[in-house]
Image (tube, rainbow, N blue to C red):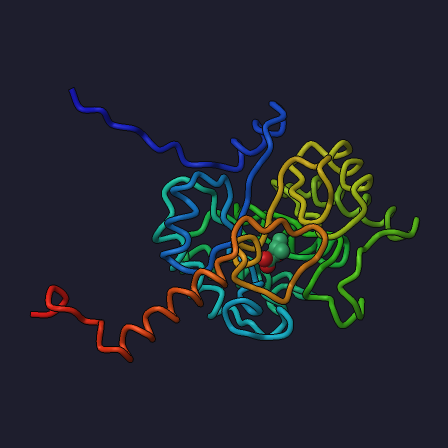
Length: 271
Ligand code: KIV
C-alpha cells in the first residue's frame, strides 16, 4: 500500500473558514524560489511576495522604486516553489493608484506572468475604484491599511498610525469598504492593538496584522527580519526567531579561513 500524503492548497475560502473557527493565520514574505520552498514546506498558510523586496532584496531605502517587472520576477520565482500556501503578490507603487484601468492591467500581468493566487494593494477609499475593477476580473484582492509604506513621503515617518480619533475612524470605514467591495482579507500594519482587535471584530474577512496586536486573525512578518538576516531594523513588533546574520558570517568566515590555509578543498573534495 502506498502512503500518499495529499497536499491541500490554501485558498481564500479556507482562510475565511479559519477565521470562523478561530484558527490563527500564519503569513510570511518570500521573494525567491529556495526560501519560498522552505517556508512552504514548513507549513505557513500565506506567502506574501511583498514589495519589501525593494528594501531587503534590492537595498532601497523605501518600497517605492520597485517595478512591476521586478515584482513579477520575484512572484514567478516564488510560485514555482509553492505547493500549499496561498501566494499573494504586492502591486508596486505607481501601478494602481488613480487609474483603475491601469490597476486592472497591472493585476492581470501579475496573475498571468506569475501564476500567483492573488494581489495586495495599499489604501482604502482612495483606491476603491481600482480594487473594484480588479475584483470584477475575478482576481482576489488583499487590502492593506494602517502604516502604508508606499505613502511614506505623505506620512513622513514609519511611526504607529491611527492613534488619533479621525484616523482611527477612517481606518475602520476603509476596512468596511474593502470588505464590502469583496476583498478576501486585509493587512493592518503598525496600529494600536485595541484598534486591530476592533477591526477584526467588525469585519468578517480575515485581518492579518504586522504590529497590530494579538486580537487580529493572523500575523505576518518579513522573513529576513524574523530570521535575523536584517540587523538594523528592530521595531517593537518584531520577534526574531534566529540570528542568521551571525550564522552566515560565521560560516563564510570559516570558508575564507579554509581557502586561505589551503584546507579546502581536501583530497575527497576534488576529482
Ligand atoms: O511588503 C511587505 O512585506 C508587506 C508586509 C510588511 C505586510 O506589505
